[in-house]
Image (tube, helix red, strand yellow):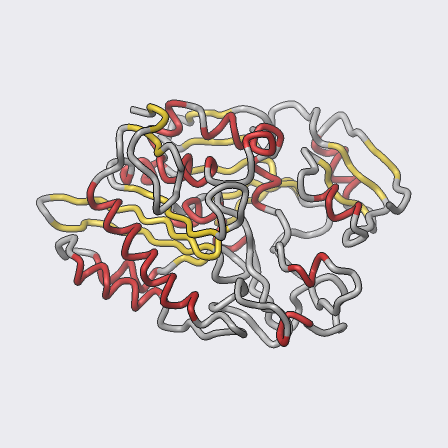
Amino acid sequence: MKPFDYVRPATVAEAVAAAAQPGATYLAAGTNLLDLMKGGVSRPDRLVDVTHLEGLDGIEHLADGSLRIGALVSNADLAHDAGFARSYPAVAEALLSGASAQLRNAATVGGNLLQRTRCAYFYDTASRCNKREAGSGCDARDGENRAHAVLGWSESCIATHPSDFCVPLVALDAIIEIEGRNGRREIGLDELHRLPGDTPQRESALEPGDLITAVRLPPAARDFAAHARYLKVRERTSYAFAVVSAAAALQIENGKIKEARIALGGVAAKPWRARTAEDVLKGVAPTADAFQEAAWRALTDAKPSGDNAFKIELARRIVVRALTLAAAGTPARLPALPASPFASTSGAIHA
């Protein structure tokens, strides 16, 4: 591992100033970063430890009805918060489907948003990867690519974003709070991650020194609590990233869908909001035909990036299944196998 400086700032302002220097990066739990450093994929000159900064580890109910989640809240603490799971069940289910219990105990909300792709060619420093080394090429294009992107990819990069947490957050219009060199600002989570285009090395809208301090869910996000699910297809049920995943959330009144939210994971370099699919569901009954139409709309622009055409049909089926489960109603217990197509309804109580 390359030698590096270690800085432990006392305030957010000090952290931003330290991380704005060339070669610096933030350190929280390090569940992704340290693996990258050990493999020589990430070689920072300076680590800025933010784990002891005050005010970033709380869950707050704000006066306007929104929920503010500090960036240092652990994935496990958030998922197991009974009030959170009751109000945002699809988000809790997504969190509990990610990684292992040990990693969820350590991993943070902010770090989860910014985890790097799990593309094998990105991790292999002997391979060409435009994301790791701009302009070097993309060995994934002619390599083992069955798990790669089918939406939003470019000739420069076909990698996918690995987060489960981000998928229902995007569907629910989550907002990201950022402290930077020019002060505080907010952006929608849908704006945080970038599609690769010709610059896949630029993965997010963050500037040098920018620190994510919180994730905020708007008041309207709770309106989907009665009909919300997250579904994830993976190579094995435990400890695996999604081949394809989907979050579906519905508001149903008088037998019709008043509002619909759909997002996909494992299909692009960012969590993919399917807005055209949402539009076709508004005002219609929650039927199998309606869900099939929504699924087709969600994947209209999909195309294989290699040996992965199967992911398009798989994604359509997962959207239909997620919508069907959401329409049936959020279960009173989180499934024993969260987000799994094989899950029973018995699990952790969240009602």
